[in-house]
Amino acid sequence: MNDASRAPYAIDEVAERRAASRSIARMTGGQSLTPIQSAERSLIHRTEVARPEVDAFRELRTKLLATMDGNFVTLVAPVSRGSGGSFVARNLAAAFAFDEAKSALLMDCDLRHPSQHTTLRIDTGKGGLIDYLEDPDGDAADVLYDTGVPRMRLLPAGRLRDSGVEYFSSFRMRLLLDSLRSRYPDRYVFLDSPPVRGGPDARILADLADVIVLVAGYGRDTPSAINQAASSFDPNKFAGVVFNQGV
Image (tube, rainbow, N blue to C red):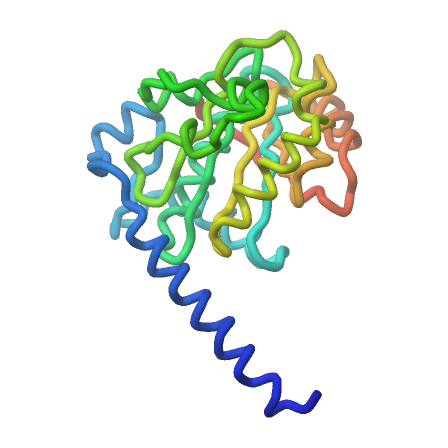
């Protein structure tokens, strides 16, 4: 096949991506959060004024985009409880959503101690991840919630469970992730993981992710604990360690 015969397909692909990007830009949901509301939710706010915390997440976004091709699933895993993994996952998703050509989906996978819906002050009356996985007739769209950040959605954990092993290793979970990332060519999925220490859930979720970010609590997690947690993951997927001094 020569170059001339391939050209129409290339043009069609570009047109499709542009149309998808326009659709993403219109994906604003409800009313956007104000700076005060964002602060109340421990969430960065898009602003033209340089702010260290916002710039830090934008820099992390840039580094991830530079190492990956196409859209991808990122696992954000804390070394231990209290390291701030949920804080990093939430704000990294927000940083991706700041780009009008991208959308972000934050999935709360900490089934024992889910926190994203509470922090973001979202009423999850229609359920969440576990409710969807347990209902073979469930529709994922029913459990995606507007966060107040344009182009950013939340898939909360749903019902409390002692462990996510059987859920995260299920075929339905894999199908869900494939569907969520493929609906838009520029959708980025972020898995808010339980701590690496104390259970197998983070390691199982790592099999579903394309890239892994480890979160260590500054002054909380020891170098040996960080190294041990990092060794749990495939080095080809491991992007590095984020030291969190905040929430």
